[in-house]
Length: 95
Image (cartoon, rainbow, N blue to C red; front, top):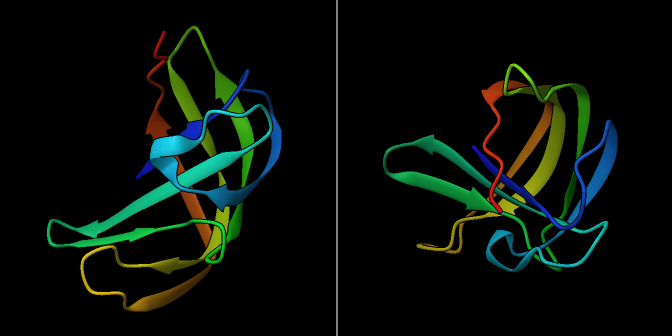
């Protein structure tokens, strides 16, 4: 899973309405979800979703939350809907 947020990271919900590679505006988010080594699903302006950060531990570098999205495979154009997803992942802060 790769989530890139534009602007400061805070607890709360983010609309997934941009390409993850270009999530450079405050309040916008992009989402890439790696289902397996061969299957990648992403969001963009037309394939959207929401991610909610419920735990943000900056000192322990951990982020947790929930997500749902209607993603598209950049390789095949196939579509996938995910509902009631959860995550707990290491937090990487890029400067």
